[in-house]
Length: 197
Image (cartoon, rainbow, N blue to C red; front, side):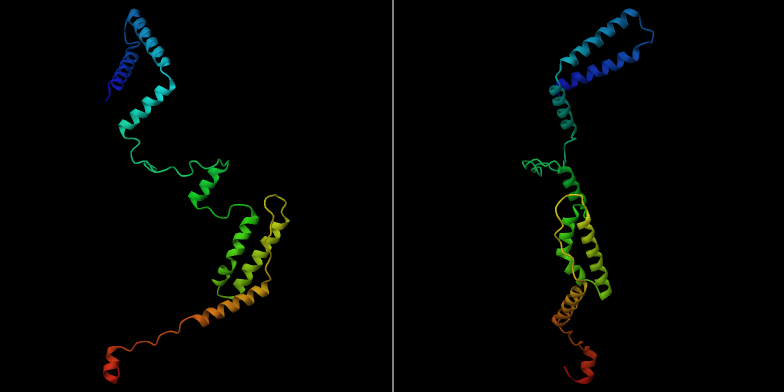
């Protein structure tokens, strides 16, 4: 421990000792002397600037190892130097927590529209495809009716029958492109008895 920190700690211990003696049968003169010492300590503390106090606290924490193993130790701080964004904390929360489904309806619908074919291809029945398309069309129409501002809704509704037909064609193409299943290999025992190899 450095000399300055040791002296400060001694003074704190002395002040705690003084406070514990108060009212413990000491004379008025002794109490007046203790009050004078307290006043001197307070004056010394007032003279110490906030910067010096902060510097002391940082050095003390470093000596205790409180800054070891920090997340970005030796690495650049992400986002430092970028232009100021008033919504930086919201965007950071969304990114950290991987929150989806938040934002203006126009943007969400555009994103969903771009991914809709892949979502439809994952379905097994026409009814599932129809239900998804009807729900999507309903939400597009509802978003167009909203008067909340934000970007305009430019996503188009989809014709359910046309989309079901496209889904059927994509499904048939996948079945045609699938490699044929290999013939099951006969076990060595059957080959031995049949005499074919």
